[in-house]
Image (cartoon, rainbow over all chains, first blue to last red; front, top):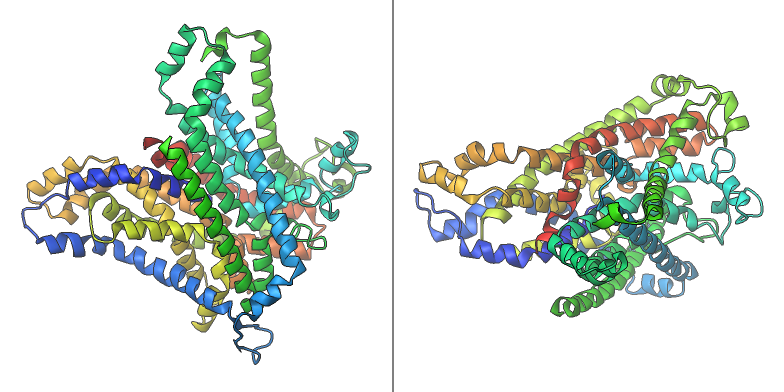
Length: 327
Length: 279
């Protein structure tokens, strides 16, 4: 789920325009002539109510309940040991070495994933913005990883890194990166790279699609004018393409960061957080605590902490965005 | 751009880069298929060679007829199709309201929908489990459909809204002038025009529901209610050396996604970014 997260937010970027348009052209007055009250307060909600009902009952209410869990002891394995405990879960969290390790891992996981996804995605978008033979088929094939179910991407890459049936350890040894063909996901120093590579593979198409659309929105006359004036390819790229893409890049990268930081599927399937928690990120730690240990109180406390961190991040992002848009 | 007039070395570089991207994208899938087709007795001797010396379909037939994967497959299909249909229906209504009405609380609702997509969904996995278990709905496909539908509604709503925005308002206004009610105008004029949009939304939601794993793991523990991802992971942890069968099952999981991917291909750019570039 959530592979579309960014688009929804990006939609928001264009919202002021469409809203003001909607304000100018008020909904069509039908002959039956309903009252203003009907048109503004009742009719829209006839169309909206199922959506609102589901969002409130399946997303918002559980969110509030989840926050309340973080102040309780709820362990399914110890059903009699429940009740309000104040900030006990958070105190435990503060001194939990695994949590800080997971936070550190979350940072590197997100940083490397997003860097490679962005650079490779930009390259692909630039290539797809040129003409070549068989482009349609090529585009369909390179975007295919986006459609591969996440659990399957995870398993496939886990198998590729397995020295028994996968070629990667042997290739890495031949290149001199590994001393002998072993599974890097059993090595605490390297294990995180397994899920990162899978994540890059899965995420490049998304960046390529987003950036390609932005590229195609740059007015063609600019390139023609630059060419007539004798600009080199590099000058065109650095003086026209990049400045035009910059706001889009900034927003996509910042939003994608949140999504990747929350993205636990690949890590859970490929390493389960191991070996020795060396690949545990905060969101996979939430899942393991809830699913394996059935400790809902503590899992919710970790989740609230993650939410807090993401909120701070989002505020910073919004502040930067404001600066960007002004320019 | 001026690629055709540039240096031949640059052109060669470009085709090399294209080839690089293509192999990076396809190699893992090729490998999946290759091991799935390799006969069991050859997996260890040629597990890491690029081509199998002989191929067999026995892994597929074993997976299909001697394991529970057909039932997992059916469960996943039920859940994904149910989610896609329900989500599209509800999102079409909500998207229509966003596109055509100006009403009290619209801005707030949009913000709430966006926020639900930003917080870590894993945050609600414990409360959802508690609620569903207190309703006695654990191990039921219906509960999965409801949960997945709620997850996908915000995205699908914005997607549907962008499709409705592309249909001129004048059309239905004309119909309403001629005496249709709004709902009749919607059904007779707007609905036929938005069929491609409905199809694309179905495809996107299906793809998302087909690959969901963590909530399914939490909510489903009985074998006969397992969805494909849950069943495959259980299989992997139980028979971790049955490489051929695991990969054959993986290939099967890929089939519906690929079909829907071909189907929504031409909406990918539009679907993922339409709102982003207009502003």
